[in-house]
Amino acid sequence: MSRIDSNNITNIVVAGKSGAGKQPRIDVLKEEFNLEQLSTGNIFRKYLGRFNEYGYKGDLDVFWDEKNQRFVPDDIIVEKLGTNDEDVILGLKAKYFVDKGLFVPDYITNQLFEAYFAERNFRKQILDGYPRTVDQSKFLLGLLEKHDSRIDFVLLVDNSDERIIERTVKRRICPKCGRVYHLEYKPPRDGRWCECGAEVIQRSDDTEEKIRSRLKEFKEKALPAINHLRDHGIPVVTVPGHLEEFTPENVRKSVMGAIEKLYQK
Ligand code: AMP
Image 1 (cartoon, rainbow, N blue to C red):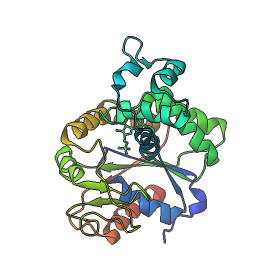
Image 2 (image 1 turned 90 degrees about the horizontal axis):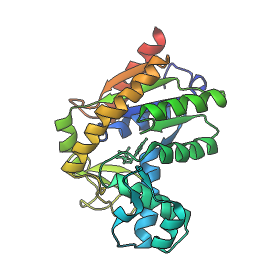
Image 3 (image 1 turned 135 degrees about the vertical axis):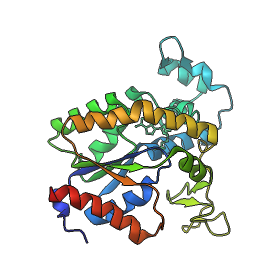
């Protein structure tokens, strides 16, 4: 166990390019500090799944107002889609962006994030994939202040673009429990089955073109978002996403070593 008292940790942000290797680090932090994971990517995928189940086959561009850079009003969406199920509508909005490897607009992401963070009392969370724009960072700082909470530090998982592309096209995830596999380094059973029994899938945005687009979004938007937190006094600890010997033991050492250094200062 860590020498840092887990009672002293309120929330942690884990940041990094999509596919940098955040999940194994998050698993360490969850266990060491008794935290829950709040992942905006997983939340969006949940709603996207609801939309896919609904089975709408038409063109999604009709729902987007290009001139005003917004979705058309919800009553028009309800009419065109043929349902007023709020989860399906949110799923449509998420899918429009996620499938292109683009960030979901801030007004949707912030609202959704607040609802989930509030449900968990604004405490004991590992924020995974949020904040990813300066606007989201400002929104988060506002929420923390309002609810007398804090972010103790940001753990930034660093990895090169080329390695990420290599890793991500072979990534598979379990749609049921969220476990993450890699066809070479951590293969699912018979290349198909999760430990929980469900069949693993490839994320719809895990193709090279979409990965490149996400990498661009990271540089242009997510890095400035992290810098914004740093400018507001939140320490940023960087750990390598690639380890020569990738064992659970080495991941733990790398993460906890970096955090302990921060607390020794
Ligand atoms: P992830 O699993 O974190 O890579 O997220 C998958 C996709 O969900 C991203 O490529 C975005 O389309 C969307 N997404 C997740 N988190 C955010 C966020 N904080 N802001 C905007 N879009 C997000």
